[in-house]
Image 1 (cartoon, rainbow, N blue to C red):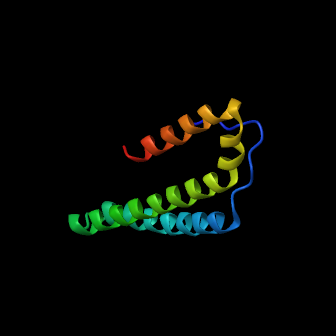
Image 2 (cartoon, rainbow, N blue to C red):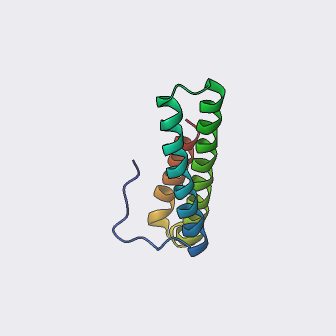
Image 3 (tube, one colour):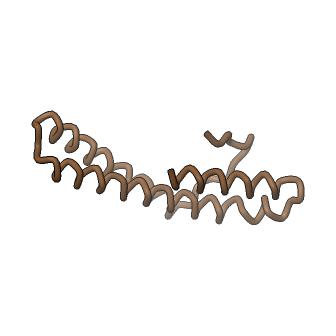
Length: 99
């Protein structure tokens, strides 16, 4: 888990809205997926729901990363003291998203 800096910029409004919308859809899909599994639904239907959830998670990751780069990158990359740590942080996060 990436530690939070002592103070961090607020997420961009557009990214926050996209993220919250995707989380709401995930909540609905989670409920539906649980119901389908409990009711022994057809496997392809369960896989379809799980893949839809995965798509929403990737959407969240993209929106948050884009916001992070817009709100933090310029400041961090212009600071010699913060540049290397910021680059490592982004590489770590991107690496986690590929697992």
